[in-house]
Length: 110
Length: 119
Image (cartoon, rainbow over all chains, first blue to last red; front, side, top):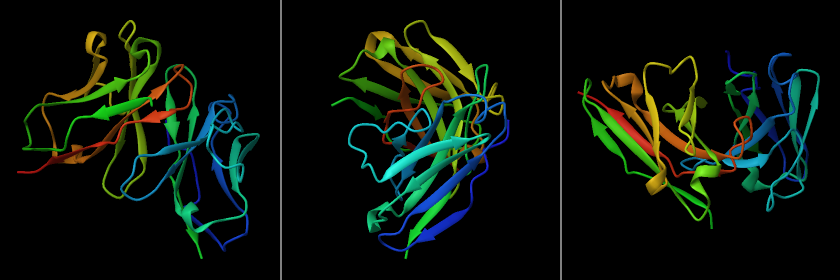
């Protein structure tokens, strides 16, 4: 099972919005609503930001939102802030007993 | 606060065995899955496998099947990841994380265990 496809990097200025895509297949992202997103700052453990495609855990700012269309899931961060600079990973159920991560996207706040 | 606390950093030689641990605090350890995730230096996250401590039901990624063993001791709320013969390519940070159901997101993560394999 190959990793889900994410852009290597995205960037935006403070206050702007950015969207990170996560492309899979009908056997993973497109087939189930079990897509989640994680934020990882350097030297830190990942943190859950979005689960079940678009749900936000308690404590995650509503600037973070998730969606899905076909085989592509997306994470949108609005009102970009300096502390949002981090690596972001998508994660999806792929049927049976398989789960897979995306390759990761480095977000730079200009 | 719900926590997963992992064992400390390890430095090993190729061919040696190793078992690292992940202990759960302040939740019902037998009611959640514990997954293991590898992060090689400068690289992304990789799903290795998962265990349900309630009945020790364990599933592995095809990429890691046969290379590692995942286990759990529910009496002490601890999950384990072990190798029988380490390779230099096993050098990585290993995270444990909790999920409510097999296919669910990981909502709580351990702090990570750095494993260095070098002669």
